[in-house]
Structures are given as C-alpha cells and as structure tokens.
Length: 181
Image (cartoon, rainbow, N blue to C red; front, side, top):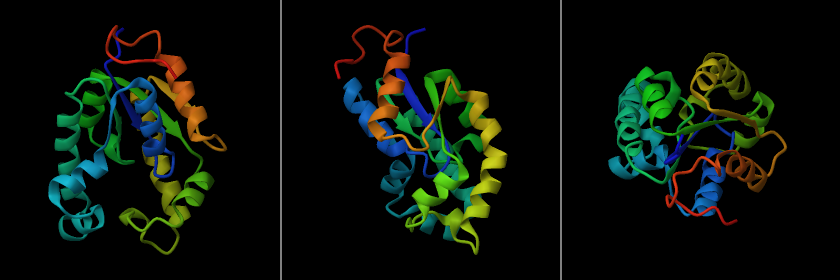
C-alpha cells in the first residue's frame, strides 16, 4: 500500500490539529484542518454556522469540504470530531488515505476543551457528560475506519506524531514526501 495522505480522526481535544501540524512538518506535506477550511470558505466561525444552520447544515458543509480535501495528495488532514457521523465521509476517508484515530479519554477531552469557546456541542450545563455521550456514539465509527488507533492521554504532541511517522514510513509512496525528522 502506498500512502499519499494521512487523515486524523477522533474526538474534540484528542490533539488532531497539533499532531497534524507536527506530522505534516515531518513529512514535508501540507497540513489542513477541515474545521478551519470550513471557516475560511464561509468567512464565519463554526459556532455561527451552528447557530444559523444547525448541526445538519454544518455537517453538509463538512461533507463537501472533506470530499474536496481528500482528493489532494501529500496532505495531513485533521477532521472535526463528528466527521465520521456521515457514511460518505467514512467511505472517502478510508478509501483515500491512511486513517489514524487519536483516542482521548473523556476526562482528557474535558480537560483539553474546558477553555475552548468555539465548540458549539459543548455549550451545555455539563460539557463532560456531553463528551461522554458523543464518545459513546462516535468511538465505534472512529474504529471502523481507522488503520491505526493511538491513545493520546498523557502523550506529548511530538510523541504521537513520531508514532504515526514510525507506523507509516515504509508505506509512503516513493518521492511523495520526506521522512527525515
């Protein structure tokens, strides 16, 4: 198998963006965050999209962006936590690249997201309980499409990026990117 893309999936607070940036630097590839791409294309933040269009409207936008971004080559893509809810997203992610599930416990997610303001699904009385509910639904979907599952609790970004790098370095398409650390 020749790897031409790496797609990072997992819950809020798992470290997808931070790890993705680090991994892309190691590979000499482009890094893209699907949530940031949606914001760039619409000119508004995700909270505003949720407010005006609801989660369904946001998920439709997300699906279009993921369809587009997964056709690129030599990209490390960090997806939003709910991207796996759509079966079309699961299909394109699994079919167009190496999928890494960054697993984080609910406790770790709660700690890492407690100061975030741009997380509309956590605008609730009990964000930790909400994270648990989301994880219950999403964890099986993450595992369904993942080529690799990495636990990120207590791990430094560089450690996680290195572990992904180690797992894929022999599978990358020759000339597609550099693996010199």
